[in-house]
Amino acid sequence: MSAGPHMEPSAAAPYAAGASVAPDRAAAAALLHARGVIKRYGAFTAVGGVDLQVMPGAIHSVIGPNGAGKTTLFHTLTGTVPISAGSIHFEGQEIGHLPGHLRVRRGLARSFQVTSLFQNLSVRENLRVAAQGRSPRKALFGWSIPGNDDAAVAVADVLLEKFKLDGVAQRASGHLSHGQQRRLEVAMALAAGPKLVFLDEPTSGMGIDDIAEMKALIFSLKQEGYAVLLIEHNMDIVMGISDTITVMQAGRVLVEGTPDAIRGDERVRRAYLGNMVTGGRA
Image (cartoon, rainbow, N blue to C red):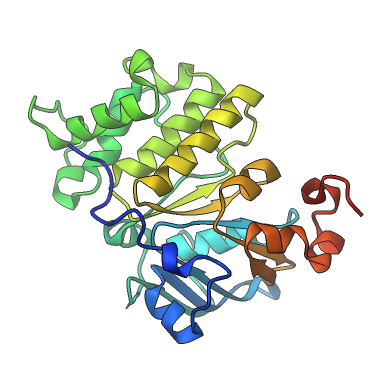
């Protein structure tokens, strides 16, 4: 059984950043299209009118300094918090008014900046419960003993192998290494059968070997047809695997483009990246 979405892996290729596509055609082709998204907390505006288009099968990274509004943007797009104004369309349908669990059923899934697992459940059970949550009726019985033919178990077993967690399948997730926990969290997002995966700093706190493995895993999602919206501070990952990069500053989009365009953009270097992406070049 495949845990991936039913879509062509190369669906986004004609619409990669930098391609010549009319704006209205690009919007129609977008898997996710956010327009004028605003999130206010009282008098404070955390996200101030963001436009964002994520194409099918693409890796789209959102970067910027701490406090730029990246995670808050994720919260609005996934339904963790309501938007104050603007619109969010997914596969052409307005979802800005939907709660988070209904957006999951539409095909969105996410990992969080801070690892969120069922600490006392085994790795396999974490994945089974996540997979079972795709069906509202089955989710009510997520704690029951699964049958041998349980589809959620099949999804869990596929993901155990893909994320190299089969050797610790019966271990409580709270006893995993940090790198293993981060891999498990991404695997749980995939268990929901999404078309678009939101990853919020998936390499945070990882060692060098774990970072390289996560980079390869994220790139493999694109190859399997998933779209990925990524928040990441590791510029080697961002520049190495992204199709499009959106740079945020003070709750707004500063600039958007291909990795090469972002690397060479003087506004980006002044505002945020400096030598991190230029390799020390002035």
